[in-house]
Image 1 (spheres, rainbow, N blue to C red):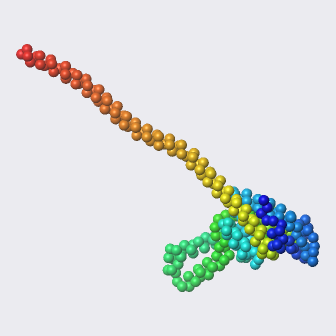
Image 2 (cartoon, one colour):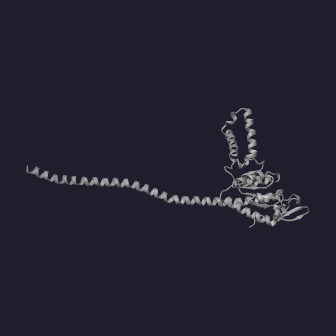
Length: 297
């Protein structure tokens, strides 16, 4: 079943492109016609591309992979932040920090600094600082949280990028290309679709269209995460089942070891009784002989 319908895209205004003088010729396959001085995007192809991208993203999520959402323009900030957060994916809605991907270790150091400041607040070290030092830390934390707070839990490079505006986020796209990270993107008629791996032709200036498309991607991610959790639970159950027989064998071996000493003690007692028995017989045979000797005397 399609993630998004033709009518939904039409109502959201996803078919509106830019003026012909701003178009990129590489977008010609996705343009339906020109009307009232603007290009009209072929929404049938948009629906097909959304379904294709959603299926790929679902497969990635079912493998436990991370997709970084990037949307720093005003129309994209709120939908990207809200929807990406709902599925636990990292996102960037403020200015893209140069080198976030290509210089990721440095970005991780800044994120660790945020965690260090939080720890200082928890253990009381923050309260022992001077007023000036606390003010400096507050400013530093506010700046870091604004720019990097949304990727706080991103411990490694993302497996894919989802970009709202290719031209605005060209630095992010270029970094992903350099590292071989696949890029999904909403591409308008003025952008070059050859810069991204998976193209979704649509209006990247409409908040409703952006929200509709990202919602479809997040729905696919949610489905993939459900599958990932089910597969993980199944593997854990199989591992537990494999360990269970060995555990029974260990318990059986321990029981046998406990039985063996008891049997050994019983055998020793029997041997002692057998040794004592001849002595008793000899004593009984000796006693009548002594009595006869006493009578003769």
